Amino acid sequence: MNLPNKLTMLRIFLSVVIIAILVFPFDAMGISLYKFYVNESIVIDIKYIISGVLFIIASLTDFLDGYIARKYNLVTDFGKMIDAIADKVLVNSVLIILSASGFIHPIIPVIIILRDTVVNSIKMVAGNKGNVVAAIKSGKIKTACLMVGIVLTLFYNLPFELWNLKVSDFLLIIAAIMSIISGVQYYQLNKKYIFE
Image 1: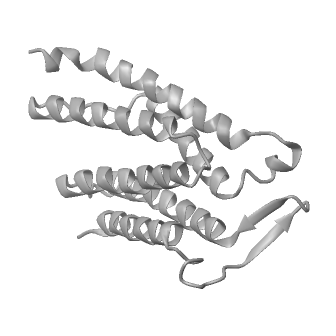
Image 2: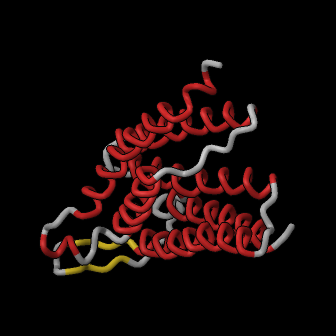
């Protein structure tokens, strides 16, 4: 259990905490969370702000664990596996919860999760044949738009909401589009391994 793997496990722990905060029935349990108003029209529920801060911290561990693992030659098979799991637990669970809470359209998590399933299957088939499937540019753009879009959604799209600019929605739509594009590109680049 080296440092990168510990950071990955921390990301899984933070993901569970975020999920618990977002789905816990505070109102039904008689627990009143702090709410405040912005511009006298936007009601902010503090649980989304807390979840957004934790999401940022968890996302930073995603960058750090990979950076440290590569720099200090600490890459392990366990690390690769648990890192992929941690990413999906963090991002996909939050997307599903935001969709169920009415913050985002359900098609966003459907596209993202479907694409991840297809790409991970392609990576598995290629890996079984001794080929490493490297990340591609469209996939990186998708990830960047997705992470920033989720954070902005958890932060009620502030400060852009003050000017009625739906930046969070725009970024999530771009992420969904780039998911489809990158999924097709992954297929095109690796179909020879699938049909060997």
